[in-house]
Every structure is written in C-alpha cells, then in structure tokens.
Image (cartoon, rainbow, N blue to C red):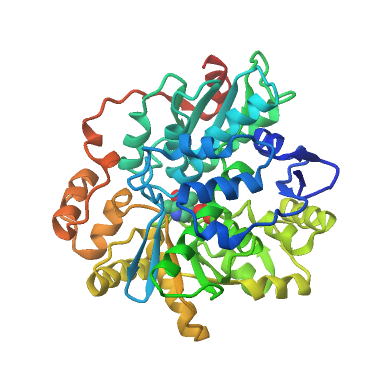
Length: 484
Ligand SMILES: *Cc1c(COP(=O)(O)O)cnc(C)c1O
C-alpha cells in the first residue's frame, strides 16, 4: 500500500518502509494515499486479537504474517485476553487501555511496534541493527523499553530528564532488564532531552550516526506503526456496547480522549473513516489547551507558556499527529506543508474556513485544569465507585462539559489511558489529605482506601535492583549513544 508524506507526494514509501523510517525525509508524517476498505460487521464479530490482526494488516499490508505478529506481541503481556476491557461507570463507558506491561495506554502500540519493525526489517532485507532513540517525560520510555526488551536486531536507548519524572516512573525505567536496553538521565528538562535526541537524528547520515552501523529509528507516535494498533480498541469498545445491548449496529457512539500528541484520538478518526459508526470525537486537554483553542478558532498557536500539570503526559504544546488530521481533512500536501512552515517560522497557523468547519463536524474540543481533574477523581470515586487516574479524570470532566453544552446524549466512551497507581500522589490527594511524601507508601494507602488492586508490574518496584544509574550533561548524548 502506498504511503506518502503529509507535506508532499514526492516522498513515497510502502507500509513496511514507512514503519522503518518513522518520519518522511521532508519532516512530514507518513499517511496512506488511500485508506483500505474494511468489513466492519465481520470485524466486530471477532475477538480482540483477530480484530487487531485484521485492522493492522489492512493498514500495513506490506508486513506479512500479521496474525502471528499480533499473537507474539500481546500473548501473556496483558492482564486480560480482551487487552482493552470496558467498564460502565455511571453515565459513561470507560475504555481501560492500561492493562499492559507498564500500566499505560502506550503499551497497546509499543508491544506491537517491535514486531512490526523486525518484520519490516526482514521484509526489506536489512542487515544492520536498528537503534531506537527516545526522549521521555515518563510514560513512553518505560513502555518502549518493555516492548523492545531482548528483541533481536534492535537496541533501544531512552533519555529522561534528571529529576523530571515521578519516583514511580523513574523506578520503572531504571530497573528495566534486557541485554539491548540503555536508560540514561540527562541534566536538563524534557525539552533538553528531546532536543538532544532530535539533534542526534540531524547528525545522522543515511540514517546512521558517524562511526556506527546502527540504523536510527523512533518509537514516538509519529511512527505509523504506533498509530495502526490503536485503531483496534475503538472497534473493541463498540463491540462491547453491542454485546451489552446498549446500542444496536449502526448507532453512533461518541469517544472522549485525553489528548497530548493527538495520536490516540487520530486513531479514533481513522476507525471512523474505516466505517465504524463513531459520532463525535471529543478532544480533552488539561491547562495546556492549545488544541481546544485550535478546534474552537481554527488557529493553532504554540506561543504560550507550558504548564506543568498533574496529567504530565498531556503537557504538550506541539501535537505532532495533528498534521495527519490536516492532511486527511484537506488531501492537500501543499497546504499542509505551508501550515507546518508557518508553525515553524512564526509559531502559529490558521486553517482555511472550510477546513475548520470540516473539523468541527467531527471533533469537539474542551479542557479541564488540575482543580477540575481532582474534583472529577473524587466525584467519580464517590458517586460511581470508579477510581480514575488524572488523565482519565480530565477526559471525564470534558465529557461532562460536552454533554451539558450540546445536549448530545449518544453513548459516551471515555478513554482511560493510565492506571491510577502511576500517579498515586495526585490521585490520593484528590481523595484525602496526604500524610506522606513517599509515592510507594501512597500506593499502599490508595489500595487500603479503595480496594482497587495495584497492577502487578508496579508491585515491589522499590525493591527491584537499579540497573541504569547514568546521569550525563545534555551535550554528551552523542558520545553516550556511540558507546552503546
Ligand atoms: C501519551 C499519553 C496520553 C496522550 O496520548 P496522545 O496519543 O499523545 O494524544 C494521554 N494519557 C496518557 C497516560 C499518556 O501516556
């Protein structure tokens, strides 16, 4: 299947090459020239794994043996064979995406990506090893490490800001086992780490660093190999509502998605384009409400301070995957290239009026600050007995706003992107006054208070051996990587 850059038709690739490259050579993102056709009814009759094989296989047809790859990716890694169960909580259906090996929704894609990368590598007859470089503000790093652990032909190196991730998140990363993994703290903030990684890519010639034979790649959500696996759980949630008798086939269902880089919600949009009866896609942001403003005004303006919030995975000013939506909405690579150029040079862009209307027909944007998220955590627990994390709570609050403001009473699925135990301080302090600053003690207290089980991978984390304790200045990332 033919993919091309969002910024020009010249840069083309088949789906296997698109997964290997990650980013198009002109800095654009790979998009399919034409979306595949799906037999939605047949898809909705299948179990989650077969559904995933069908959907990912349709999106990435140049990667063979998809059913086998899906089995290898997910078997034994998730707490349930359903992978992503749904739970009714009061008025909304919660789609739980956090039952994977690191308790974050990114596991759904990052368990699959290594399978896709190694199969694509084989398909293309690549002999050189791949080196995955990733900067993380917390969640992506651990999910990527777990996904790539001991995968043949691939090495992975994760950089995180020294002192810039939670204690639980750090413990998850520095205890990572595997003979192909490296984890390193960088003196600086997340932007410094991310800029450092981008610089490494810029220094690469023909995809490899000077003095190295390793082909650089990324586990970031700009890779189409991360996006494709996320489409499945929209179908799965719809199937659950059918099975529960809440809807009949063809009824529209709304989805509210806690959004950062716009990858998760874009997968929902693709599900809709593939024929799933999706109603509105509600884009939920925290105090970093650049997407809310964009959806409401048509102007994307990154020139604003970045707020540190209790939902850190959504603390983001440039949502990379929005570029793909701009392409899908316009089918015009020149227009997208112009908008992205404007974003790079002036920090903002405004889409044409007809594109804004088209976006508003499918997306609704809202945001909720930390106080609102805390209130939602307490309310959902006290009224419905459901414990949500900070990102999920943000989406919950925005979903309520949507219903109140529009009166649209179609069934609502709220996507839950992390276990509450990944953010024990913020969650516990929303329910009661804190008596400790020890995050691990807070996990125990949260268990005692709510009876909601701690995910296995987060149990006993503080007793595990720290294997990766390197801390480097930000200008030494290149020498660190060439040493691996
Ligand atoms: C990454 C992440 C998000 C945001 O997802 P995007 O695909 O970047 O929009 C939301 N919640 C959690 C917990 C995450 O880790």
